[in-house]
Structures are given as structure tokens and as C-alpha cells.
Length: 62
Image (cartoon, rainbow, N blue to C red):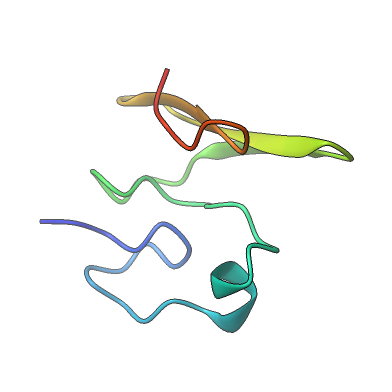
């Protein structure tokens, strides 16, 4: 099952701000857990306690 990284709900609609790239993900797309998110002037990173960290530069988990 996949979760919407912006709402945390299974297969939910993408919010407009997220579609424009203005909002970092707040929930893990793999498990739906709330992530720790840090936003800075040059980007963001988000960390799931189970699945690791993603950031705005790569969009991939580290």
C-alpha cells in the first residue's frame, strides 16, 4: 500500500501547493508515519524513523 506523502492517507489526492513543488512531504510514502521535516532557504529534508531521509536535492532516500 502506498500513502500520500502530503496528507498521510492511502492514495489520496495531491494538494495544489504540493503539485507546484512548494510543500515538502510531511508523511512517509511507504508507511504513512509523520516525518521530521526541516525547511531552509535552499531546500528541505524529511526523515522517517523507519525508512530514512529524503531531501529536496535528490528526492531519493538516503
